[in-house]
Structures are given as structure tokens and as C-alpha cells.
Image (cartoon, rainbow, N blue to C red; front, side):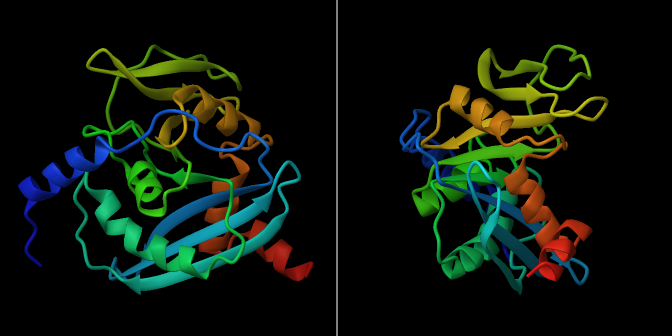
Length: 223
């Protein structure tokens, strides 16, 4: 497969201009979604999981897993092109669409301000928040490893997101607005979805469903 990175870079820069970093969603949230993407069979299969939870109960009301052939190679900074096709396939199967979607990955906190949360938000015209487990770019002040501590994530003098200590003595999360959500609301909702674990409930459940973890097995056994 021939990849024209210069062209993809221009696509990202163009799309990033369409990202809205203001709140454009109802604050009376009833359903919150979470996404997770992984790869199987030596990366040849992309697996995407989407879960829909009730809010504030965080009960599973819908979930879907899509597996499709991987068509884009692993290139840091361009992961959204690798991940979004499977996410779209899973999204098409979701019957109850959420009011807000937490995406496992970067949003605005990306060198060209278009991580998977922003890219997916544009494709779906959905309010999205990026919740990443690793930093892609930007700098931040040292953070005390006490749950609830927060510090800005800054790149080239611009705040691109937040560094959130979601649990004591764990590595922090990197939270940033995706699309149709402000940076302040991105942090607020990420914190409101925490229930004592490192990951917010929407992405924690998506990860559990995608990887068939004990949390998901327990849910299936209770059905």
C-alpha cells in the first residue's frame, strides 16, 4: 500500500480547522459511549469495540465489536487513519447512540491537533473526548501521584489538554477535547466518569469488551 504522508498531513491540518473546541452538546447526558481499538493476528485484523452506558448509573445498554482487515500501517501521528474504519463499522451496528463519546486515544493533544477522538468526532459529527494512556506531544509540570491532581498539557505555548492523575500511584491519563467539547468540559466529564479505576468507565468497559476481560465476562454471566 502506497502512503503519501505529505498528503495525509495536509488532510489532518485541514480537518483540524473544522474541530470545534466549544461545548455543542446537551448537558443533560443520559448515555455515554466509550471506544477501544486493538489488533489481532499480527496486526492484520483491526478490532474496535464501542460500548454505550447509562449515565450516571454506568450500566451497559448496548455494545458492538467490529473486526475488519487492517488496511493502514502503523505510523505514529497517523493512527486515526488506521483505527477509524473499524470504529465506523462498530458504530453502524450501535442502536442507541450516545450523547457523548469518550475515545481511547488523543483528541486535540496531537502534533497536528487531530487525534483519533477529533477525527472520529468529525466523521460522526459527535461530541468526543480523547482519553489517552500515553502522551503523544506537549509538556507538563511534574504531577503528584494522588488521585484528582491535574496539570495543563502545553505544546508551543498552547494548552492542548490536561494531564489527569485518575488513581493513586498510577501513570496519569492525557485528556483532551475531541470535537464539539471544550477543554474544560473534557476534563470535567473524564473526572465524572471515574469510579476508582485508572480509566473512566466508558473506555474501561470498551477495553474489557474488546479483550474479553473479567469485567465483561461477569456482565455476560449475569445476563
